[in-house]
Each structure stands twice: as C-alpha cells, then as structure tokens.
Length: 334
Image (tube, rainbow, N blue to C red; front, top):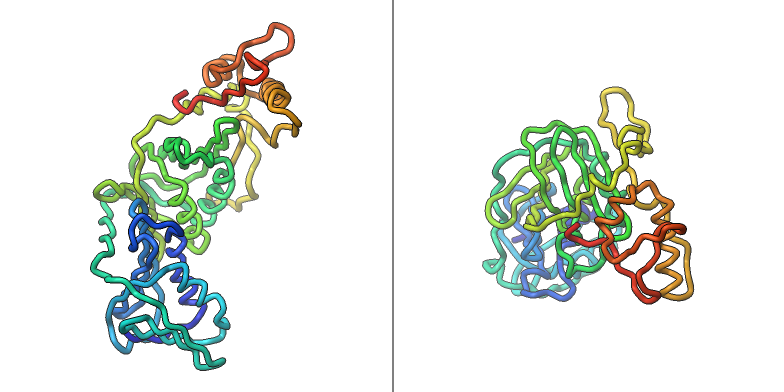
C-alpha cells in the first residue's frame, strides 16, 4: 500500500480509532485497518462495535495494512494541517511528511485477523445529523459509569413516531426526543462506546440513517462514507415512562435550540433532577440529601416507591433512608 493524503482528511478518517482499546482483549481491538482501493477506508473494532470512515487520497499502490490506531492518530495530530502525508506499508507502516520534514515507522499486525464488518440489513429511519449529535450530547453524561450494569451502561433508543434517547445513572434520568423520518419501530440499546462513536459521526453529517445489521451487532448508523455498528444488548430497561408525571408529559419540555420551520424539533428533559444534589460530608447526610432532593422533584411518589425499593416513606418529611448507612439507588430492573 502506498498513498498520499492531506492531513485534515487523514485526521477525520481516523475517527474510528476512538474505538481502539488501551487494554485490548485481542491485538485487533487496538488496531485500525487501512484499506487503499480508489479511496482510503479506515475500519476499527473493539469486537463489540465496528466503525468505518472513508477519505479521498491519491493511491499509488492499493493494499491493506493494520496498525495501532491510537498511535497513528497521535502521530497525525502533531503533523501540520497544511501538510501532505505519505503512507507506505511494508514490514512497518512508514509515515512521512516532506514539509516540514519528518518520518515515523509504526509496527503492523496481520490484517487477515481483522474482523469483518457486519452487513447492513433493515432500515429503521433517517434523522438530522446535528440533532442526533446534540441529543446524544445531552444524555451521554447521564449514562452510568458502572459497566457491570450492562443494561444501563448504554443509551436506550425508542424508535417510534419520534426518536427518543434515554440514559440513567440510577439517580438521574435524561430523555431527549426528536422528530425523524421513521420506517420501522424498534426498541434498542446502544452501548456507551457505540453511542460516543455515533455522536462523532453525527457531528460531521447532514443526515444519519439508522439501520439494523446482521449477527450480534444489530444496530448501525450510516452517514456519507462513514458507518458505526454497535452490538445490541438484550436486557430490560427501567420503565422511564412511569417516572414522568401527567403534567410533565403535557407541558412543553425545554427546547435544546430554536429550530427553523421545516427542520427537526429537538427537545430534552431530565425526569429526575435538573442539577446535582447538594454536596454532603458524610454518606448518611448524602443519602438524606438525595432523598429530600428527589422528593422535591416532579417524580410521583408511586414511581419513586417502585423504582427505589431501598427507601421508606416518612409521613412528615417525604423520603428518607431506611438506615443511616443505606443508600440504595434506583433498581436497574425497575
């Protein structure tokens, strides 16, 4: 493989390298596959998600090479944006810049080990790219950091007449809804890494097509020459619709941004909290403060009782912990 490409184009094409693991289960999950055949195609996978991007390049010799994704991306970052980058594959991947002069030699792995990207199957619908990026940006901070809780270590997508994105960390719930052009209905989970890759893809795309894909990786976003395929989780999500009061359903939620006529409407709301609970110095005080804070929110008491089984109801002071040391969050299976 031998090609020349502009630095900004190469940097954009290396967006899939965000899936590359710093602690890989397999060498290919730390690598990107560069495929030069008319255009440069970059693929990456952590064995649960797959990402693809393309860029225009001058191809002198077609070919393929797999190289450490994070390392290549760091090298490209230090190259001036006005420079043209020369890539040549042999026993190593040679990266060369003429002005200013510089060269790097990166180790490669066997590209035959790289997994095949699942084929796209049924189309679910099309959504405005900036709207999707903005909605994901609103809900991603609410995804739990506990990866052991697989069903909420993800963004839940409800694809119906409107597209709803839901995230929770068991204490807070964020919902973003938007208009889109639906083709089929579905309820899907988008793992955290895949959701971040979708957001990166949507930021630079006018429209994004959401589809299913074959095999265990069953959810894909396509835009331009890019594609992100994520594994769909089989799990139960908390009943987030039950956490909205009738008044909150009927009232207009805060608008993310003013949309001109004919463009997609973007709305987002936090069903549990608008800001973080007040800081406390002890765990018991934190538990009491969180209970008082949630009691003051718009959630109905019945929903809190159903989703927070570790709490007991006080007749005079709203919600309080069952014990001074207890702090049971919302049940993931609620």
